[in-house]
Image 1 (tube, rainbow, N blue to C red):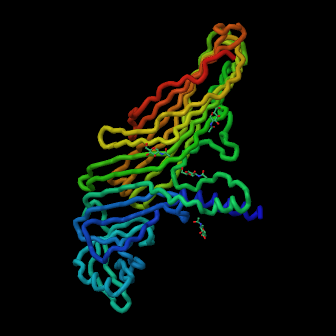
Image 2: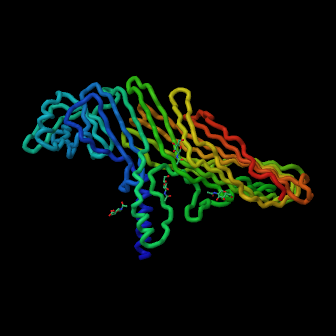
Length: 451
Ligand SMILES: *[C@@H]1O[C@H](CO)[C@@H](O)[C@H](O)[C@H]1NC(C)=O
Ligand SMILES: *[C@@H]1O[C@H](CO)[C@@H](O)[C@H](O)[C@H]1NC(C)=O
Ligand SMILES: *[C@@H]1O[C@H](CO)[C@@H](O)[C@H](O)[C@H]1NC(C)=O
Ligand SMILES: *[C@@H]1O[C@H](CO)[C@@H](O)[C@H](O)[C@H]1NC(C)=O
C-alpha cells in the first residue's frame, strides 16, 4: 500500500512538472465552414484535473484575405504534403457533406492558419499559407489546396493576444482528498496548480532554503552569509497585447500578475577579529536565476518567464561579533497591473506586507550595522510572431530590505546589546532596461530591545 501511495505521489509530482513546462494546447472550436476576415485561435494549458485553474490564450487577427483556421471549425485532420512535381498541397478531412457544400462557396484565394497542433512541412509551429486551386472530393470528404507560404505582415492587419487565468472548479472530491480519507495519511503539499511558481531556492521538504549559507561578503574581517534565504509563492498572469502588424504599432499592452509571495531573509555575520578601525564591506550579486519555459504558442507567442534573485548587503563593524538575525515578509494576495505602452501606468492592490522578525542571537563588543537586501525579479521576454512585431523584456521586481543594528552602551546593563531591526521594501516594473517604481512600503520596525 505504501508503495502504491509513493507511486501516486511520484505521478502527481511528475504531472505537475510536465504541466508547468508544456506549450499551450490548441482548443478546438465548432464554428461553421466559412471564411472570415477575422482569424481566431484559442489555446489553453488546462490539465486533466478540473479543480485546478489554468491559463488560457486567445489570438485574433484581422486579415485582408478571406481566411480560415481549420481548428476552429472541427476539421478532422490536416495533411501537408509535397507532390512528386515539387508542388506543395494542404488537404483537410471534412466532417460531413454539409461541410463539403460550404467549402464549395469559398472564394478563389484564401489564407490559412495552420496551428502547431499539426506537423506541417516538418514544423510544429503556427504557419500562414495562401491557398488556391481548391479541389473537393465529395465521396471521401476531402478538400485539397495548392498553397504558398505567406509571410506576415502581408495580408495581416490588426492582432490581439489575450491571456487570462481561468479559475478551477473547486470540488471537495478530488483524488488527493479521497486518498487522505482512505489511508488517513496527510498528503504532502505538492501543488499541481498551473500558476507561475515563485519558489526560488526553496526546498519544500524542509521548508527552508535549498542552498543555505550563501556567502555574500567574505573578506579578512567580515563574513556575511545568507543563512536561509528563499522566496515562496505563485502567481497567475494576465496579458493583453493589441496592435497593428503593418506598419507595426502597439495599441494596447498590459501585464497583470496576481498571487502570493513570501520572502525569507536570515543572515549570519561574523567579524572574527578585533578591528582597530571601522570596517565597511558591500556586495551586490545575483544568487539564483531560474528560467520557466511555460508560455509558448509556437510561432505566435513566446513568453519566457524568468526569476532572478539578487542579494545586496552593506556591513559596518568595529568589533569582534557573531550575529544571527533575520525576518520574513509575505504578501498573501497581491495584484499588480502595468500597461507598458509608452510610459508605464500602474494599478496595484494587496501590497500590505505581513512582517515577522526572527529572534536574533548576538554577541558583539561594540557596534555592527548591517543592511541586507533581497531583490526578486520576475521577467517576461515577450515575442510575438517570432519577434517581428514585438520583442520586449518586461517584468516586476520586489525588493525586501532588512536593516539591523547591534550596539553596546544604550541598555541599562552595559554588557547588553541594543538591537534594532526594521524591514522595508518596494515594488517596481521594468521594460527592457528602464525601471519604473510602483510602490514603496513603509519601513516597519521589527525589533527594538536589549538582548
Ligand atoms: C465524488 O466522486 C465519486 C466518484 O466519482 C462520486 O460517486 C461521488 O458522488 C462524488 N461525491 C461528491 C460529494 O461529489
Ligand atoms: C494550491 O494552490 C491553490 C491556489 O493558490 C491553493 O488554493 C491551494 O490551497 C493549494 N493546494 C495545496 C495543496 O497547497
Ligand atoms: C485578493 O484580492 C482581490 C482584489 O483585491 C480580491 O478580489 C480577492 O477576493 C482577494 N482574495 C483573497 C483570497 O483574499
Ligand atoms: C515567518 O516568521 C515568523 C516569526 O519567526 C514565523 O513564526 C513564521 O512561521 C514564518 N513564516 C514562514 C512562512 O516561514
